[in-house]
Amino acid sequence: MTVQQPHSHLPDEKGKFGPFGGRYVPETLIPALDELASEYKTAVSDPSFQMQMQQILRHYVGRATPLYHAERLSSMYNAKIYLKREDLCHTGAHKINNATGQILLALRMKKPRIIAETGAGQHGVATATVCARFGLKCDIYMGQEDVERQSLNVARMKLLGANVIPVTSGTATLKDATNEAMRDWVTNVRSTHYIIGSVVGPHPYPMMVRDFQSVIGREARAQILEQEGKLPHYLVACVGGGSNAMGLFYPFVNDTDVKIIGVEAAGEGIHTGRHCAPLSAGSPGVFQGSASYLIQDADGQVAPSHSISAGLDYPGVGPEHSWMKEAGRAEYVSVTDSEALDAVRLTAEQEGIIVALETAHAIAWLKHMSDRLQPDTIVIINCSGRGDKDMNTIVRELELA
Image (cartoon, rainbow, N blue to C red; front, side, top):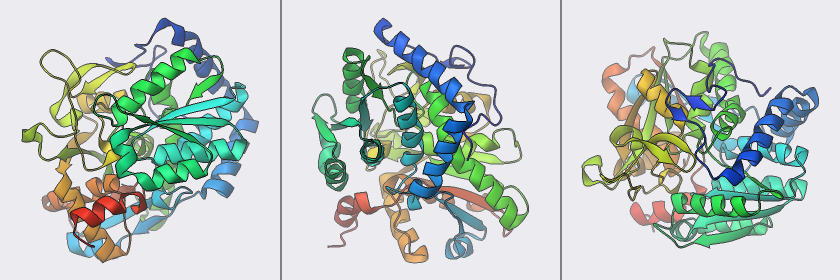
């Protein structure tokens, strides 16, 4: 479970993944980013940090998570389908991996206050959880629309002692929550650490979050070799900001026979303009601290996004995903709201697993892969989170009440 950089040499010393990444932030944040980069570099070389991280991941988070052979889905799709069960982590999603690493860095830097942004609420819950565990003050920014559609996670954050701050500006979703968290950090940078929840933002965050999440792919690699005696043919994961996907993908980047597929949210359809698919239908630009693909209008202004999944409702994406797209190392596709809902029902009925709407986007892509699948084709899908938080939406949309 050691935090490491297993393959790629990227980013470079300036935090660039080719033309993507970097730092596009106010001057007042540069010292904090330098401090964080330095502390991270020191920490990953410190055996005591590694030991503490390993102990928490094993005994508190519940790692290693299983790699589950989904036999009924496998039969349906005539392939060997495996689910990496991040939904079985403490708090119900992969977000706790990164939150654990960053809270330990905050303690090393003696920062008594933590802030975070959250969309679906899972990163907010994970942050509130580690703050409760270590006794730090916690303020969570969350778009008002997400507060309403993710009321369960709001209650969980409050029960854990966090202060949830609704954001009503803009589209009142993850993008706007991130903007407010950035403003807070600029004002309170000396006492506050900002736990960014995905592989986005200014350097060193995309690299650091990737490394903390790469435990997913390292475990999956060892598990599939044990169970099948060889590497998978395909890796599939949903992509919003992209941390669960990068966590699975990164340890396989140099294994060029392993095909990598990231699934974005097509919302109501790419052609409608109501989607969250910057890699499929966006263009390069600068957004919230780094250069990457984003959804923008002809004037370069960030355009509104839409997804039924709060965790994917974000107009940007991590810079390393942008690099992987341009380098041809990964294929990025998209599925609609209705396809994701169908996948929620399918996975529940076939495997007895109620997945998050985010995860459902990855599972939904299986039906588009039928011409690529054979009985011996091995597919690992990252089951990034459980669906408890989405039940209000699922009940309404699938008319289960």
